[in-house]
Figure (spheres, one colour):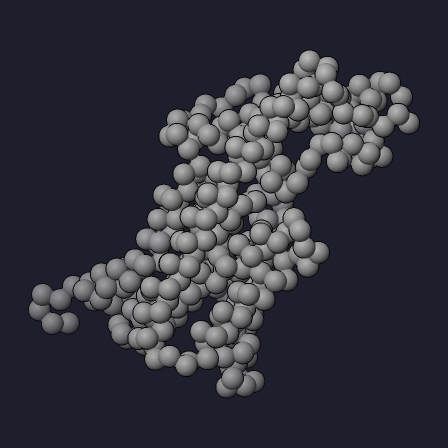
Length: 328
């Protein structure tokens, strides 16, 4: 070791340690930027952390890819992108399917975090390739991993409510962009520049559009919910409940409609307060309301729930806002 040279972790000098640490910059800074741009703060910090960890777990595809490289030299261009995007998609599909995310904003944020976590694990395997290789991968490949995962999630969450194809288009979109990137048509430096400029612009633009779309949805749906709540509270223009059920069950149906609408209004009010920067305290009565909702659903039964489902308007976004309230 030369005089004055500090030995870093794992035999890497302190100077190189700083360069490697700085190379994390683009993907992590952009993730923080997306979080800051989320004016409604839809995604809790712990969910972003779990997404990073899920991406890191998907980064353990290294043994699969190693085996693939032994089968065909074309694996990097054809097989690896498919395997990696499939593994990354497992968690963002879970988040959408369970209504933990429901909008372009939160789905892209969580999916980008998954890609960032994946890139952290994958790129550590390339440290021995030297500083130039490592920095190019952090500035190019890392952003690609985050960006294509975000694209897949955004396509899926956009199509989910109106397409029978489920998550296939989003997954194919992520795999397709990744496959194009891995063809090597651009030099490593050119590829890094394209990712550094193009991916943040693409994801950021869709993210901003998603913010505007979310704002429109909150306003329109809040007006609709308030109108329905007013009808239920005053008894005017009540929705027609299935006459085949006994009066006590119809009463429970009406109570469930009232409670669900009340919670829906509350959830949107919380979103508006959060956008205004107002901190929201936990409501001790919320647990009791959700327990009452569960009791009413059990009392009404599966057949009755199917009968009033159109009145409840439980779309993925409706389920998301109820889950969001329940997690507070």
